[in-house]
Image: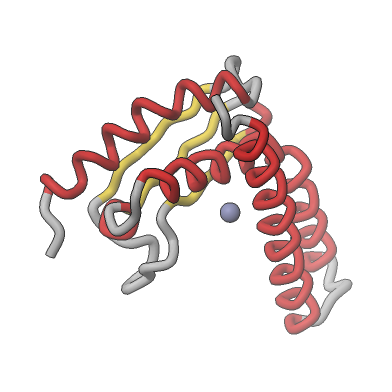
Length: 145
Ligand SMILES: [Zn+2]
């Protein structure tokens, strides 16, 4: 069982690096909260270190860090996760549009449940892919600083 002592370096690292990356990603006008929780995202989900929820219309976002998962990794992984989550914030107006469209089409019974599930899964895969590609490009661009 992880202790508060093991979580402290994660909180300190994210708290130190978040303002630097917020500035680099031109997110200065955004209100981005980092919430640290001592649970996993879902029961026994040890693959999700953080999630992001953005209300882009209000330039507000919350990044939730799942400390029992995040504490298993070193600083390079935490840094790339931080950039990944901030990239979700950066792309949230566009990413949210697709979600809204699928929900709307689904509500109008344009799709069967399985078509809706397949589109939703595909949308999330594409969102993660584009987010990860931007993350890798950003990290590479700032590698030698
Ligand atoms: Zn993601």
